Amino acid sequence: MRVIDMTAPGGPEVLKITERPQPQVHAHEVLIEVAAAGVNRPDCAQRQGSYPPPPGASDILGLEVAGTVVACGEKVSRWKIGDRVCALISGGGYAEYVAAPEGQCLPIPNSLDMIQAAAIPETFFTVWTNVFESGHLKKGERILIHGGSGGIGTTAIQMAREFGAEVFTTAGKKESVKALHDIGAKHVILYKNEDFVKVIKQQTQEKGVDVILDMVGGDYFIRNVEALGHLGRLVQIATLHGTKAEIDLRKIMMKRLTITGSTLRSRSVEEKTRIAQALEKNVWPLLNAGKLKPVIFKTFPLNEAREAHELMESSAHTGKIVLIVKN
Image 1: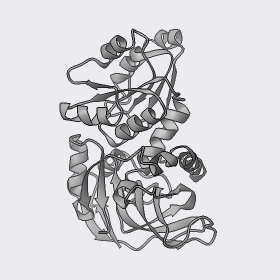
Image 2 (image 1 turned 30 degrees about the vertical axis):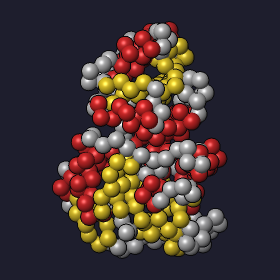
Image 3 (image 1 turned 180 degrees about the vertical axis):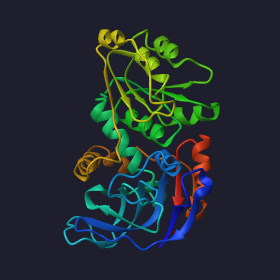
Image 4 (image 1 turned 90 degrees about the vertical axis):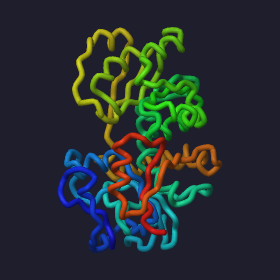
């Protein structure tokens, strides 16, 4: 099968198309003929050598796919050959075939095509478990979503809107403002020109927000603490600005804040299956009704994975970048 491989850790230029054997399917797995695969920042980190796959996972890039089931392990009970699914995987997505645990597969929503479906798993799993399970976002609360124009950002904005929250988001370019308003952000803060802490305090009469979803880290940490209100929750999911921060702990104590964080890739199959079940119950009805829709910025054929990574790292996109594996 065709796959995207790395000649060595490094920049996008190390990505090359090559051939590998099809993966073997274990008892509780399905083999998916991949139609499309989502591109995510962890893929870039793995390519650079800073985010190795967990033990037992494929070393091929790619954490989410959509396609058709072409084989089932002997203990698979839900899926059958011919089913259209999207799946969260621990690696192997940049390929014509991938094996996925049956519990990490979900039916492709009625209103979506394969390209849109490939943009769902990594971002929707991430947003659900972090914003709604760890962050406990509730109707009527305020949330600040950093990086609103990315795949996770555009997903989080829509989901928070549908569950009744008031959405603040940060963005780097003016061209994103209208698009982010259109999908549900009430306040779009251009972080290069505005201080998000000041804007939030002005817009909330000094009350702050209830939840912050942050993938920036570093110097944003102390500012996030300032922007949170009483009993606020900060959920850290990445560290684009660095892994270290210094904070006066009394600010956390006085506001009675909760600070948490997570990664998704290294979680067990059982935990990911549980998240998939929660998504199917709580979010899939919104997808089927057309109330949520992945925002697709650009697609590339599989053999242009290099260009897809260059675009991802430029941060010039609003929404998801997807590789088309099968036309």
